Amino acid sequence: MRIRSLGVIDDAVVELSPGFTAVTGETGAGKTMVVTSLGLLLGGRADPALVRIGAKAAVVEGRIALASSSPAAVRAEEAGAELDDGALLISRTVSAEGRSRAHVGGRSVPVGLLGELADDLVAVHGQTDQQGLLRPARQRQALDRYAGDAVAGPLAKYTAAHRRLRTVAAELDELTTRARERAQEADLLRFGLDEIAAAEPLPGEDVELSAEAERLGHAEALASAATVAHAALAGNPEDPEGIDATTLVAGAHRGLEAVRGHDQELAALADRLGELGILMADVATELAGYADGLDADPLRLAAVEERRAALNHLTRKYGEYGKDTTAVLAWSEQSAARLAELDGDDDRITELIAERDGLRAELGELAQQLTDARTASAEHFAAAVTTELGELAMPHARVSVAIRQTEDADDADGIEVNGRSVAYGPAGADEVEILMAPHPGAPPRPIAKGASGGELSRVMLAVEVVFAGSDPVPTYLFDEVDAGVGGKAAVEVGRRLARLAKSAQVVVVTHLPQVAAFADRQLLVEKTNDGSVTRSGVTVLEGEDRIRELSRMLAGQEDSETARAHAEELLETARTGT
Image (cartoon, rainbow, N blue to C red; front, side, top):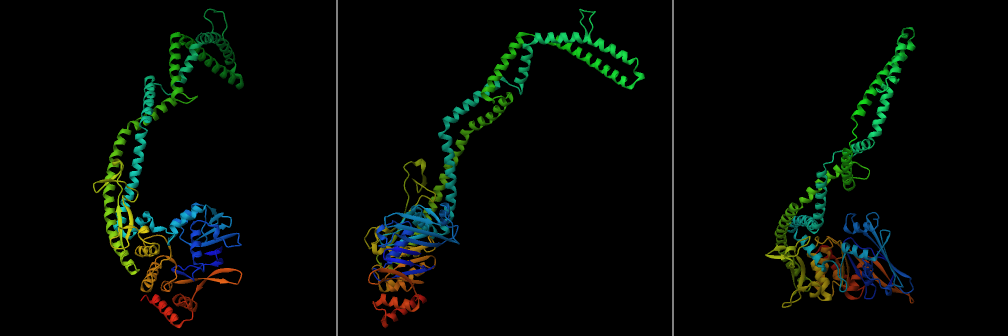
């Protein structure tokens, strides 16, 4: 993390250890600015008063290593950010005028996104700023992980049943709330199908009727034309002297036949005249039959027009523009299938109600299993945290875990647990809250209210140590975790921070050498003054420099032999764990 122009810090790089990092320094040196910088990267409030005097803006930049599949990485990528070689780059700028800007993965983002990412990146525990496990939802999640398979098994079954119940409930709600619309749709479909069934249209029938109507409407003209054509081809019986085309062609054919043996070309023409004569005779015969069979009955024409009107009515209502009765029949087939589906809704509703009730009963049983498993796990957890607090100079504090359910006002919407209808969610019906009684006789209260400001960080340390490995947050920040403790208790605080650092990254701002000695890396925030400008810097302490700082923290004297010996002893104790 790089800090520029923030408070007393002009320009400093803070290199945090993957394990336990202790931030130390004299009062007023600027240790708080390190915590403030982390707060800004996590979406904390931007105070323009933090900008160093004479600077235009304060800038904090952080490089956070995280897996691409982690919730924070996924959320950042959704916002358009990109990972840089397995790390997420975050920056926050606060101007002296009060404007604030945030960038994540090279993309400008709303400051609120930093707060969203913080939920999955860092748990902050301090007298004035608490995140993470103080939220009941996170407490339940951590308790579930602490319980292991005892909760994981029924929780997986419960989650699957709950997901199915939501699907069933949504479908049931759709069917029941739209019952009137579906009934109206079914009535319209039924009416249309009845209308089509009564008319009994045939595929392409209206096309055939159109042709028949055209023929019937011009029957006299058609008959006259056929008669005239027949007379021209075959002769008019009323005019025996008349000459017809068939007779003329026959005469021509006979003339050519007489001489066909003398020329092949003429023989071919004679054959063609013979074929023409046969064709003309056939046409004449058909014309005679057409004229005789032509129906000029006006009653038939009226019936055809009436049938065409009925079919056109169906086509306009149920077919497609410009299409024939085939489209009407296609609509009838589709509508019959849809009507069968709508008529089956009542049966489907009955099935869904039965499935819903069965799922609620199943959820009730699984929720009870979850409650029992959580209750048993909570007892072990509370006893373990209480023991930890005894080692952290809080021997009279007692921790308990309240597991309760909220009764559902509408019994139809709840599930039955222990004979009561209770509200339920994706993870069961339980509300989990960690309580603490600071001394005998005091009522248990939520840990945020049951502990004083100086005690809260120690309480959260004890909780996090017991939950170590269960809470998915990868980084913990403790400020004032050592307030009000010293001696052996301070050593135990350091020991537990080191234990927590085996499964997560831990950053601690401390003034106790017993705590700092257990750190994998110690950072010194040091103030300098050249007579005109005061600034602070951050230095990584190693070897002799670290012993000198621990000596200062022990005795206020860097060169005290006694303090040096004690500092070396603390480091050895931390190294060996004894």
